[in-house]
Image 1 (cartoon, rainbow, N blue to C red):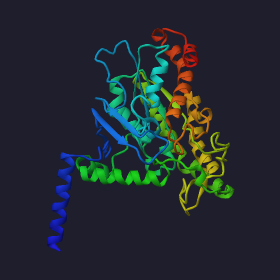
Image 2 (cartoon, rainbow, N blue to C red; image 1 turned 90 degrees about the vertical axis):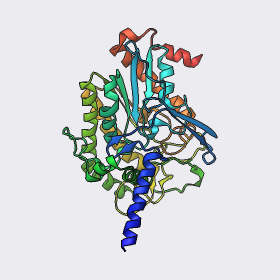
Image 3 (spheres, rainbow, N blue to C red; image 1 turned 60 degrees about the vertical axis):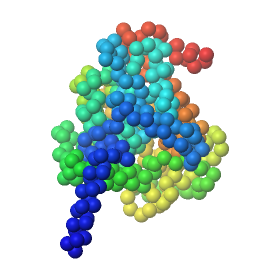
Image 4 (cartoon, rainbow, N blue to C red; image 1 turned 135 degrees about the vertical axis):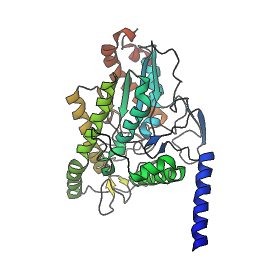
Length: 381
């Protein structure tokens, strides 16, 4: 027993040293502290997802984000960051193909000095966005921050205290993970497994291979009540905190709802009904018995979070871009339930540019050199 205990301790120490010397996982979070890899280039040879390119190059700049480095002389720039989870980061779209970069190209028609970085981080919720603002972004004094939020906040009761105006004390595990690469890796692996169980991973969607699932109305009503009671109040508080932090630092917050492939309607490519197809096979966005959820049920739950964001934007006078209502449901635009194909990122960027340009013209009139209708002219050309 003593030798076993000693061997275990030695193995853990060796693992800790190895992860400190070389981190094969490129961890972005150590406990509750961001540790973003920077000046790195990921090369991905895709052989599993036919909806994505075979050869993908994904580069992080000196800030640890996607896009151009921030120039030293940035006084005349209109600077922005796009913040969100995997649907913002677009990890499996190559350099220049993620929607924040495409949005920058669109808006530079009217605002030639518009600079934007993609600060999306796969798996991050509104709680992680707050850490990102406090630890990295607000010190850079951006003119605006765009938040595409909702998907990673669904049913997150572990974040309930995070929206309080007083800073939540880090847990013992988070404090240990700040100083241990091994514990941080284990904690992040657990977080990733939780996300996959909620259907938030990356996998090509095969609509033809999915079963038809009837809507369980009593179960859905019960789940709606559960989310309204146990999850949405804390989500609202976290959103308010993001808005407050931005405004206190002179930054314009822009809120965007999360679109979903599944829900009412049919796919314009396959003609299949997106309402009754199984979305999460034997895993539900809620707790209790493991049952299949169809597209309408998943959409109804996500829409609770989108509706909360719309309400808050209206009450707080924050610009809102309602992608959940405006982006079409189509397998042309999504390679799984919520991640965008290259065409989807292009369509999303055009939608955001069209809605955002007038708001920027009102807020930053000196930065605009051409009217916003040049966006439509550029698209038609």
